[in-house]
Amino acid sequence: MDAPREGRKSEAAWKKMSNEELEKQYSPSRWVVRLGAEETMRTYSKIGNEATQRARATRRNLLDVPCGDGEGDKLDIYFPEAVSEALPFLVFIYGGYWQSGSKDESAYVVDPLTAQGVAVVIVAYDVAPKGTLDHMVDQITRSILFLQKQYPRNEGIYLCGHSAGAHLAAMTLLVNWTKHGVTPNFKGFFLVSGIYDLEPIVYTTVNAPLHMTLEDAQRNSPQWCLEMTPTQPMDPACHILVVVGQHDSPEFHRQSREFYQTLRGRGWKASFRELHDVDHFEIIWKLTQKDFALTQILLKTIFQESESHVHPTFGLLHKA
Image: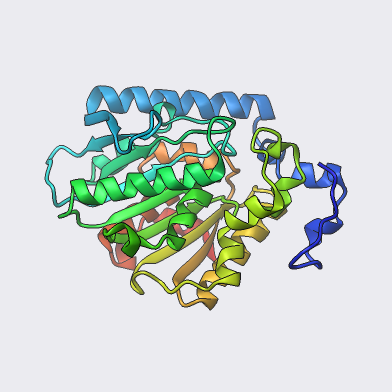
């Protein structure tokens, strides 16, 4: 899509890029360093499928739980061995540029977290072209409302989203929960290699099935919304970690760092991490490993361990 790239931040570097460079910046598979693009995508899918099959075979679970009125409003819940209503819940929102991906192949983090007493929820949403971005945001909102109503004694809801899933998780920061009559017990957010300003996407082939207008992109950009209409933190103690892989593209790095800075500037308890020597896909498939740095961060945040108990792989992280 060729169009004048006007509006806020006219000085933004991406607006000076050629169409080819912009396309490359927003094509994560072109930045992988160990495997080729096709092999990386095959591995990503294979590990996700195997992790999901293993979780369904070995963990107590509730599958395809309806959480709304729509056909696509479903979620899977995986429980630790000791089932209780008073559990911490980690909600995982998969990526796929809002046009691919499925909860049925995204249970990467189930085994290591349920083994430590955390319930894991994998949320479905209607990807494009069936679903619009507004609809996807509404679906994630409904899934959180359902979870809070179903498990009101939970010990905290933690959202973890990857790529497009990180965008959808970030959009819940802007929801007027009072309007819904339920305030989720949010305790933490893990926004992994996400996109928070959707305007550049409008001018790439990613937008072909999304059919986003500039207005659509702005309305569904947490970066833009926080800048234009600052939103007060729901809970000042709720921690938001914005994390990006070392081998993510420069634009993904910029998006993550700027969103972190905007959150901090608006009073949110946010931190930024660059995870050493992982690309856009490894950063998620390695969540199947209990000793992976990001897995340890999830557990540390949920259980508020002291720094002295943090796994040594935390040394791979760099704080802004």
